[in-house]
Image 1: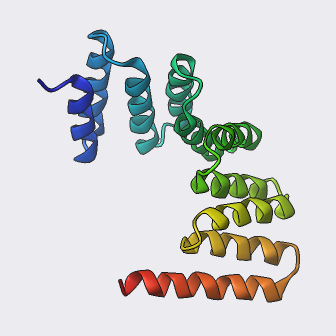
Image 2 (image 1 turned 135 degrees about the horizontal axis):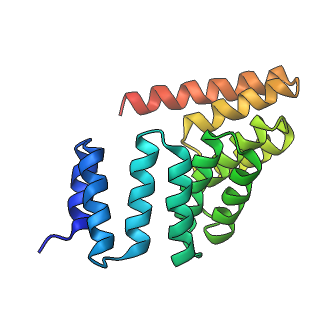
Amino acid sequence: MTTYLEQGNAFLRQGESLAAREAYERALREGEEAVEVYMALGHVAAVQGEWKTAVSHYTTALQHNPQEAYTYRFRGIAHYELRQYHSALADFNDAIRLSPYDDTAFWLRGRVFAALGDHAWAINSYTQAIELAPNEAIYYEDRAEAWERVENGRLAQEERQKSVNLSLKSTHQ
């Protein structure tokens, strides 16, 4: 038997966000797993660019399970999109505390530091992301941008070359 949550997920994969939202809301009414449903509703809101609504749904999911690192990461993304950088930073820090090998959370935290103008801390976060996932070209590209901001053109150029090399390598695989 297919759950409403599964139906919503199928609709979301097909790009039918309104049908997905309806299925998720039905899942809540039917008493399906609230954490997963609120996460899914947050994803639907994010896909639609409704960042405040996404924050609300992710927050509700965290009220049901405050130990879920990915929920903090997704809520951090929504805060970032709303330019609520300090809230985003807190969420990415919580995601990292709960999942210290989440390279994406380190990278996203670096983006927040960059948006706040703290490029030294951005470089630190990008470096941690690269240590965990050394083949992600975007991490090098963002670190190159941060090196430029602290006026180290040589390191910026080296980072850009690493990014290009990784991008070329991934297109030929």
